[in-house]
Length: 270
Length: 369
Image 1: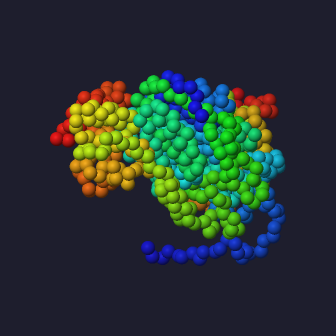
Image 2: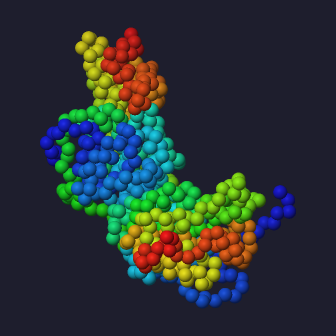
Image 3: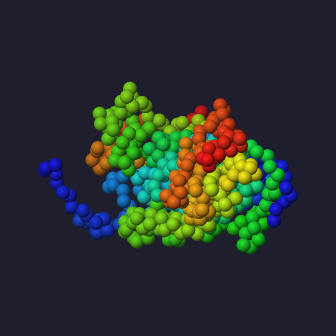
């Protein structure tokens, strides 16, 4: 191929060329290694930070096991200073079940992407919820298989361009997206189900509250938080436009809010 | 120490042996002839303080065991061939993640030899396989399997079948695990590598992963400086050491003057043994060899024991799988003939009509003359 520009490789541990100042420290207790390997503009590091901050705030730092699925977020199994079992794609809720049943004294959480959880592992999360398994599952939903390069998943919204739906997802050819949180909220074993996002500061704070509440309610039954995250690489959009794309396209289908909260005495889904 | 001998179906005996060996987590999905093992575990495990999960699929059964094993709980699962095929991906990964597990393959017939000994999973791994020929031996193999699983931090497979699951035999079940500190039943200490959640926030948090069981702490980023080849090489070296350290087991009879040596494994080997015995009583110079461990396969032992014979005949109830291992063992020194074959009853469970001792006798005689 001719005319292709070779881009220089910039080491990530060098200071950025433009001026920047530290406005807030990382969570030193649980984010053990500052640098992550995810793309600029990715929403997953923000979501992960909300999760580990919540673990620390609940005082579960030394009584928590996280189970990671396969996807971009897998990289965090190495990053985080909490005990981790790395599971196979889709299997995290089963692995977490084994951990929790063997050690009911521990807080057990899973982190999976939408491809991992809603495609390969849909059965696992549905059954874990139906059993009322005392675990908290997080789905970082960006509507694509980010790690494989941006392919359609079960949550990809209609019209969305992906590597294997280049003209946009078409319901007649590719089916309809699954609203996983809505599906799970119907199951009686689930006590807390919510969907947040990390596109704006307000949503990050709301999501953080959902995460805290889900982890706290874990001892009552299955809890679930779906977190909409940006994937500018997989979405074919500018990095800075990704939060806007999230709000206008993803959040329009996967609407945010608390769908079920039996702990708080209300069941929003019914 | 063993309890009194009792008449038990193979499935019940296997379940009792697993509970006695300290298994405290079992997950399974019903599929004949594994189903009765699951039933027995569901009946016995809770009263021993353990957990028996009725998983929604074989994928979930082994996933649950993966989690339990990561916390240091003695875990076991199983299925029959088709279900085992679904579990192979996790078995491959659990081998790399260094997680102990005992897996029962209550196979339908002997068509699963390759799946069991080569692994149907991806990548470069081996796991020990025991092939008991009757219920008392299977009971002994259960405690051996847990011992190997923990010593080598690997899944270990016990290959049974319909005969083993459904045959009633008089068997004594051991009384709880005889650990180094004489630990009582159910009071097994969790190993040091097991996750207990307590190491978080210290900079030394534990990781159980097929990609390496130590977190990368070079400060350059999650995957920076991470050399998967180093991990895989370490896994390969450990496998090599394991396959050398586990002594391969063989049973043999009538080899002194044998002109033809007949080889078989698992429960069909019992019928084979009976046929050889009957032929011996008529003066035929037939010997018998049974590999008890299929991985590591007793290559050197078989080579030694068939020395002096004119030929080797392998019986198994399939189109000829273990015959390849026997040929490797004999290494061209003797002709190795396959005398087994497919023989399925209409139920599909592999109760093979040609396991009739009379038929076996005819086949052996055919090769011997």
